[in-house]
Length: 271
Image (cartoon, rainbow, N blue to C red; front, side, top):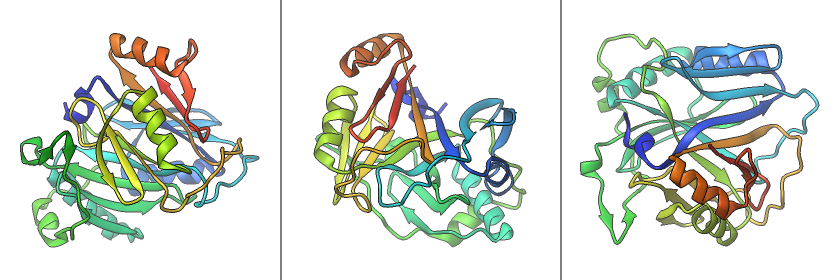
């Protein structure tokens, strides 16, 4: 089990609304390597190791979201090992995937891309927590150059066979209109710890992970509440221990289903 999912509050399932369910689902299965867990005419649940953690919902009438508004920046899929990430990188090259970026964040190594409807994706592997540097509750994270050649070598010669058991969604990065109200919601009401402040972004965690949620204003400064239905993020599910769940739901004012909305209308479900 990863430190990301050992925390008292961690990401469970992410749900996106899409126009082309078949096309987007095929992308996540064939290009990314997620496995189909279940589905019907309107939804597909994807995951790894028999566990579903990424749901796609069809809504052909939904408004097409803009990259300038509040909502999803990226869903971050955490692989168990660096070798897994190296194998996925070789697979991505073989598939001819368009990569938008790559970075060594000191705590992790990450590769970035987008799905066919523009939803951001990060696929990453953590470095061992013993190698993370903390000072006064804040973790060191940077955007250093990723050594792609070393990563490819570490992937070995084994072929990529899709997301391995133990893969999860490690964190979700959201676009917001203002960092102040975002901190009031995610740290104040949701109770997450602020673990890093970066120009235009704040990172939040539970249980000593580098981050489970991040918010930024890089494209969305001043964004208003989202108009729904719209493509993109529909819900971020956070899994909590019973004690944490009850405390957080009370602070959020969440109903019986545990769903609250951040200041821009993004649904956060505590279950």
